[in-house]
Amino acid sequence: MQRFSSRYKEKILTAERLRRLLKYDSECGIWIWLVRRPHRPVGSIAGSINKNNYRDISIDSIDYRSSRLAWLYMTGSWPDRDVDHRDTNPSNDKWSNLRLATQTQNNANTRRYKNNRSGFKGVGWHRGRERWMARIQIDGRSKHLGYFDDPNVAYSVYIAAAFKIFGEFARVI
Image (cartoon, rainbow, N blue to C red; front, top):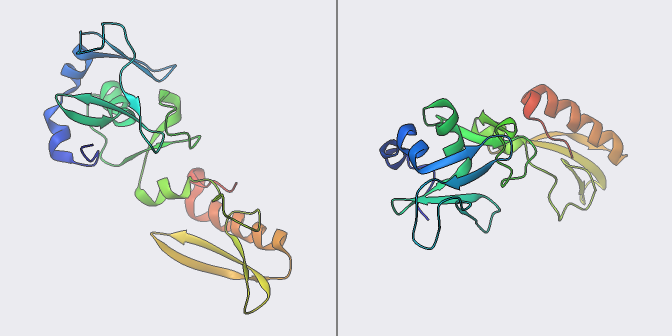
C-alpha cells in the first residue's frame, strides 16, 4: 500500500475528481463507486478493510485511507494533520466521528493495551518499589506521575493528567 502520509501523492487527487468517482455517505461513513471499476460495478461499496481495520480505497493505483478521503470530500482540501476517529474504531468513517488531530492527540485517543495487567490505562506494577506506578505518554516520551499503594489512586492521577494535557482527545479506558 502507498503510505497514506505521502503529501505529494495526495495532491494529485482533487476533491472534484474524487466526487466524480465516488459518493461518500457522511452519515454511514460508506463510499460508493459512481463509475465502473474492474470487478466493481457502479453502486458497489468502495475499498477494503486492511489488517489494522482501516478502510483503504485504491484510485489510479494509489491506496488512500478513506478517512483522509472523507476530509477531502467534505472540506475540499487534504487534511494537514492526522484524521482521528473519536470512537477509536478505524473503520467507522462517519463524518461526525472524524476530526483533525496532531500525532500526540491521535495517540492520546487510544484504548488500554490488551496486555495491561493492572486493568487501568496508564497504570502498571513497579517490581522494584512494589507499588503501582502511573505514567503518561506525551510526544512519544513517558512522563512519570508517581508511585501509589492503590491502583485506583494511580488511575485517578492518570485520568487527571490525561484530561489536563489532552483535553477532548483524552481517552482513559
